[in-house]
Length: 242
Image 1: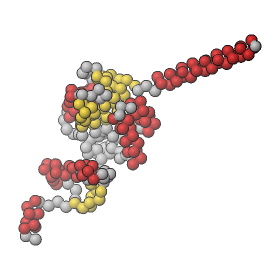
Image 2 (image 1 turned 45 degrees about the vertical axis):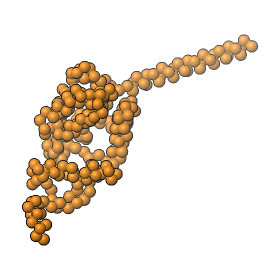
Image 3 (image 1 turned 180 degrees about the horizontal axis):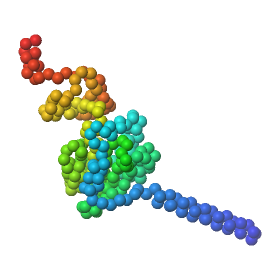
Image 4 (image 1 turned 120 degrees about the horizontal axis):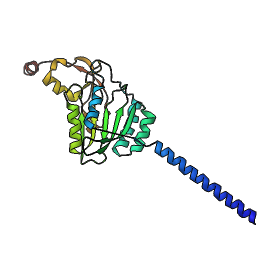
């Protein structure tokens, strides 16, 4: 009888030790998987990122594949829904050239953000993303031309933190980093107004307008088109005098 009780006690002790060991191992794994925390002035951080961006004619932007875009979509969903630990796991598994940080902005109220930044040296040029988990306004600040347009990277970052915006997105390269032009329908009117002679003609590929694609539920991709450049007066004459 005593032997049976002793064996049961030993089994309970072994099971308890196993549970404790499992808990300790799990805890150590969780600590190791925590998102790295960094601190600094947000404006200085963005200035450093902008300084290291690929400049004009460097071919610094690498077009993502369809598979990469699908995985990236899942990553963005995790960031939007504030599943930051899952997002960090996706970054490590699918995008090792990026890093997700918990960033404390010492330049303004020590506010905490989640910063998705490409590692150095840059190999993709896909941009920088910032999420404010304690946002005051559900808006997104965009910095589309941080290299070409003077100081917009600082202005965008400062507007983001002072308005309490939810998201900040900054382009990863100079607007003319690559020779190949990715013409977008949305930018045609601006280019006509500023410098119409830079518009391509002939057989081209163009990305349709985002509003049109959204309402028609079209997937955004480059479409084949034929472009011609004519003066508005010539078009007017052709209409009234066919």
